[in-house]
Amino acid sequence: MIQELNERSREIFRQLVEAFVESGEPVGSRTLSRRLGLGLSPATIRNVMADLVDAGLLEQPHTSAGRVPTDRGLRLFVDGLLELGAVSADERRALDSQCAANGRAFSQVLEQATMALSGLSGCAGVVLAPRLEASLRHIEFVPLSPGRALVVMVTDSGEVENRILELPPGIPAASLISAGNYLTARLAGRTLAEARVEVLAELDAERVELDQLTSKVVAAGLATWALGDESRLIVRGQSNLLDDVSALGDLERIRSLFQVLEARETMVRLLDATTAAEGVKIYIGAENPLFQSGGAAMIIAPLSDGRERVVGAIGVVGPTRLNYARIIPMVDYTAKVIGRLLR
Image (tube, rainbow, N blue to C red; front, side):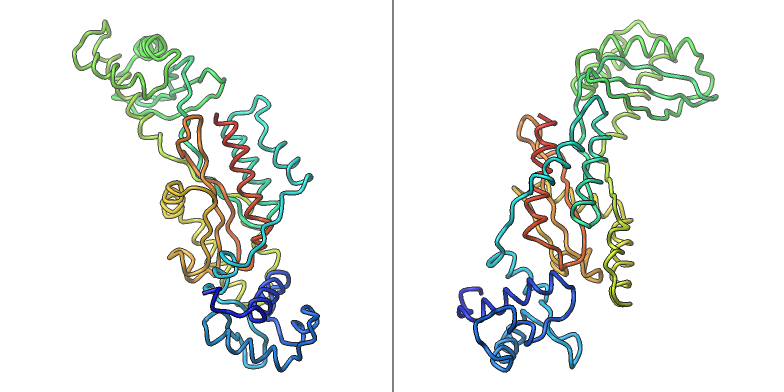
């Protein structure tokens, strides 16, 4: 549709969207006349704006107000008129430092990266944490109470993960020790996915010298770890969305957006769908069923591992009047930094 607009209409539309992104307020013809500097009268600009309203690219919130872009107009702007900026040196340094491993667990790196992206963009940061397939060094079962134990797994990279395991009553501590020793020997230097099938086959065929109770502990441990292997959703910086609320209507939209961000299962499905895309994906307003009542936009980029497989996603969620030119390259840069860590 951008080709259907003449040069004057395109420039007026571009300037109006940029002014709206800067202020969040409806933009009037006099404001545009000053910004354009082309000697166009406010009356001429109003006529063009009326045509853009008829085309579904602008709307008038109030009778006496200026115009704001519709979701369709923002999409047209992003796809056809947006000139992307570059990530500044300061922003690169901030993101690089927060994404640096420095002996931290990868989950901590993701938390810090999400918070840094949130702070720099002024939006809520979201990440669908990838499922790591690190080789294992050690596994241990620690008794907690009758019928419950803590499974502790240590990867070759030093990351530690814990999960609660429900056990049949009457499992002695000796069985927990034997199960830990057996799994450590079988899994050392391999990923859980690589060894799980083989271990379960050995248990089924009773080819291992384990008593019945120890075998139950091993099977329960593998099953518990498999159930916990789903992607994790991290959301940080929701409070940033309240920094620029100027009207009751804005507050209602932000409240609706909070509800969306808290619907973790729905957000995971959305981000999971994003991992099928290549490059940065942008959702604007009603294009996404989640945001129909939230007036929100999402900029999200996939995370790829060393085998070039998409294993997660990271990005931001905020109002539709995001600074797309600045935030899109920022999200893309963060995804690439984390991708290098994954590789």
